[in-house]
Image 1: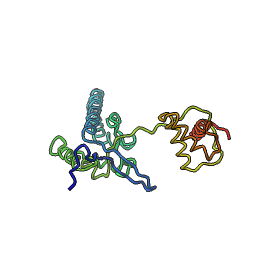
Image 2 (image 1 turned 135 degrees about the horizontal axis):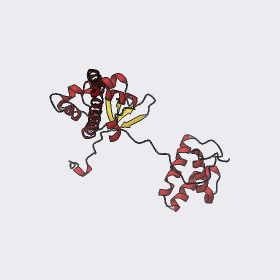
Image 3 (image 1 turned 120 degrees about the vertical axis):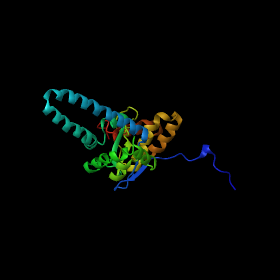
Image 4 (image 1 turned 45 degrees about the vertical axis):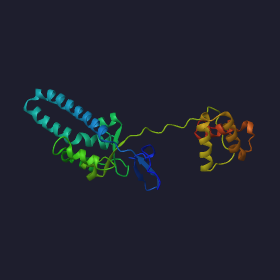
Length: 241
């Protein structure tokens, strides 16, 4: 009988949410846990509180009319603050934006009006019986850290990944390839150019000679020529044939 796996070799818990688009592309979404979501909610709660205090101070000068307007604005801030920001600001309330979170549908698409309204209406069920007990138990019972509102609305709170940076290659005069390159050839060429700074000089020369062989370029010119073509693929200039 083989020995049991030691804790050091135990598999790492993967909390990423896998979604396959209709085009067959796999998306990896990172669900936000209880702590960052709670922090985002507290920030939004503080912002709403400050807004209400400021509004009531201003409306106090209007007497009965101010009281009526204050009640209407309180209703709007209570029920529509989250919904408006989530739908009109790419799933991000101010609190979520500060923490780096956003709300999406389960399939990764932007959250819509009905889903956002439903998940926020059911927030009052998550609060029961006190201090978000049901919501906390719900978050801890599923891999997506969904509260009851998320389960009913089919939504997911995820980390908002920064946009991918533009690939960097060595500064050189952009060139055009002598003939149209296939997708695999372009990937190989860009992979070499982007990782060139991480390779030793000998390794760069070796790989450049292999990649440049179909181009009929001498090994001495291979690295510079490949970097030029890679720069041209990135659109860093008009290039030359």
